[in-house]
Length: 337
Image (cartoon, rainbow, N blue to C red; front, side, top):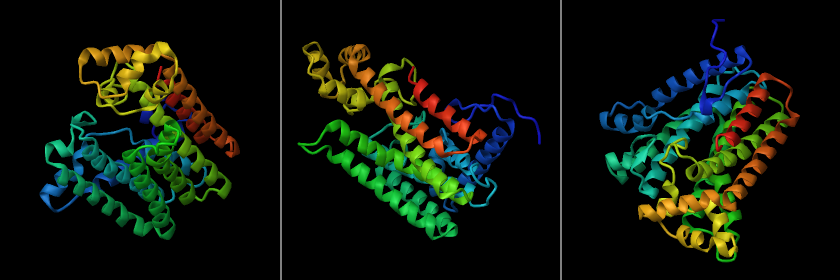
């Protein structure tokens, strides 16, 4: 086996202590990338351009990474593992096309969004095209994959509906928000983990543990993005800091701020209750949020999901893949500073 640098980074800057695992994951990610691009190919010139738009923009490939790591609790070279990872990433990419239309986003992954480059209809139909390509791969993986994908897609849609309509009047907005994250983000990462373990032939106990890990780390990952959007002075989250705040999107720190009854937070509550298009008000809200208990509460919630993710790994044998998943959990927490 050819030597590889010991500290090669993959998604979220993950590094490996085990050289063989690192080499295997990097090969697997290369195979996923190649298969992903092939899956987006079309004989129609225009469709080919729109389908490759987000693939060419790059991305963390977090879901394929989880699939590949999960497969190392069984036989990672099983031929179904890479196609299953590609299905998860295609599904994720398809939802991004749709999300950008609903959010009226102008930029995605540092590039102009598909809905801005073309229009909303083209973006929606391109997402549908990617869903169809994922379904074509699923057909070769068999009934288990088709059923699991259908269940996952149902959760993705329900999560989007719940996010769109908002919490019921008598519901806890924070509990509602966390449920949305579980459906919209956690469910697909849980499926990514389950696919990898299942097709590698892992035991049912390990498959169940990895599924729990995937869902919990998925929610944690989104919460860490919420915190970064407020706390970071850089574009670590892939967006300009305070983007959600400017657009009036109620992320977890904002929801905690709105729930506060502390009179000293009255100005903060007034600001974050609406979109902040004024630059001075936007800067003021960022400053107040960064100094508030809301960020600390969001970090505590993040730590809780990370702890559950770590606990789900307790049934796993002490393999390099387990260590990598534990490291990934720490990265999700520490990336928020």
